Image 1 (cartoon, rainbow, N blue to C red):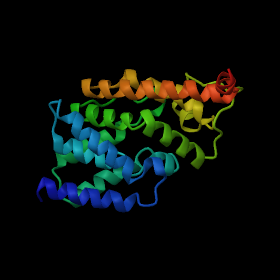
Image 2: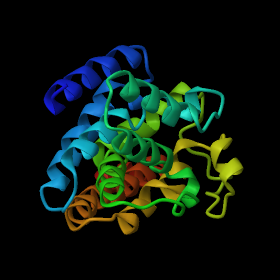
Image 3: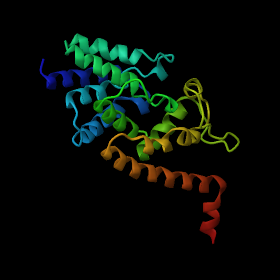
Length: 223
């Protein structure tokens, strides 16, 4: 099967698998990551076929929605690619990318590295930044029944993997526990440039959020 046909089959598979997914982890999240991965790959020496397959399959079965099973995503990706008779080395590579792409509270930095992982990881992290990142954070927070913000619950910047996975803190805390940290964890030059712009947008958003929270913006408007 030609690479283009495999990509087409993969798109159809992912769309079907994620048709009822939570809004921040649905097909359109995959589509954005896929688009940015292709863009970033243009400036890197990578196998673009592996990049595209990994971007499309990176969240095919997110552990957050499968009882914390960290292997269901890699296992699903492998099973699907093998069903298409994809080269075994490629299957192994994509499986490793799916296994190691997640942030996990900053505790997923070792064990496997490749230029293709670097590209797809940057594309995935970019979708957690900027206007889209803000929308996704609050969408997931609402999905989990979390509060917007509680001044009495400070962010925890030293969580273990298990604490990060089971956190029930307000959504604003997530900005400090993950989103604002991503800019300095980008792997590629293109990713870093894109992340900087989105990071600045989130900082401006938080400033406005706190002004509205404590009413200082209304005070200023009356002056």
